Image 1 (cartoon, rainbow, N blue to C red):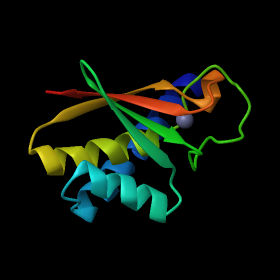
Image 2 (tube, rainbow, N blue to C red):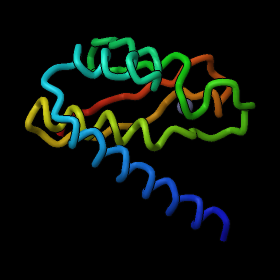
Image 3 (tube, rainbow, N blue to C red):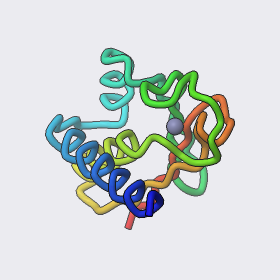
Length: 114
Ligand SMILES: [Zn+2]
């Protein structure tokens, strides 16, 4: 039961992050980086290989939290999705692949442009 409630809460966090990201009307990825830095959301590094990867160091949600075998940063994932959809004018899918909750030193999100 807790699992389902948990998933619901994550979806709410993702949706509110997305709404927040969209409302900022940022114009470029550089502006996302600057916004996150200025507002202490995290240090963002963009790794652009086969797909867009975004890393958050010192993530506001999970930095310093112990490993608990799950990703925690659904708000940030939604936030990235909201910002990028505005910038790219396309739907994107964001998945957190690294997180302090998984024992990593940073959070990493993979962005798939749909
Ligand atoms: Zn995280």
